[in-house]
Image (cartoon, rainbow, N blue to C red; front, side, top):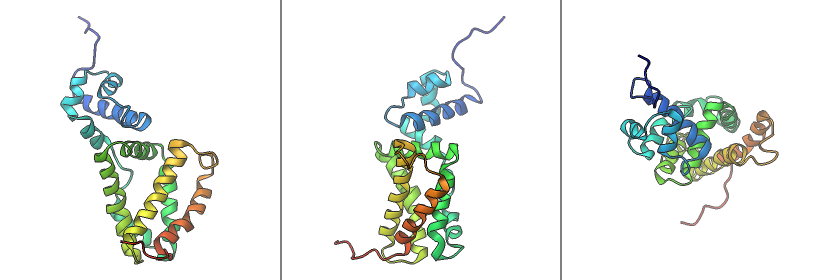
Length: 201
């Protein structure tokens, strides 16, 4: 007797199907506009299965986000060629990583979500600043490493937002290697250059 058609039942690949649908919707719609019901519809499952596997929307987001690289090992790699070239190395890493569709989808999804969700914003801060940029700034050895890390972070997130989220003219259409060339001296200055007078405490 043929099986009646209907929603996908719980099974070994149901969780993965939900995760794939969630990852795509978070990246394309942003966190606020993504709903558990919409994810369930795309995955062809009952909404209760989404909460069964992942609980809340926040927990689902944090679970399915797969950052494109592990930050800690990168710190040594970024300075391996010498402190004077760290801006170039970091700019090339950022630009080439974001040219990969899956990495770009993940990072744009994170950025969109961080704008509206404190939990996600904290995740981004811990990943980008605490685990990568602050250790990098300290290893480079400049004064005020916290400020240097924040400035580098603002450059990277601004690039991601302008090129891939807003699609700013010229930036969105520019050759990636040209953008790396342009960004490199800015990052180098933030990491090793003179930042001027200290900010008032």
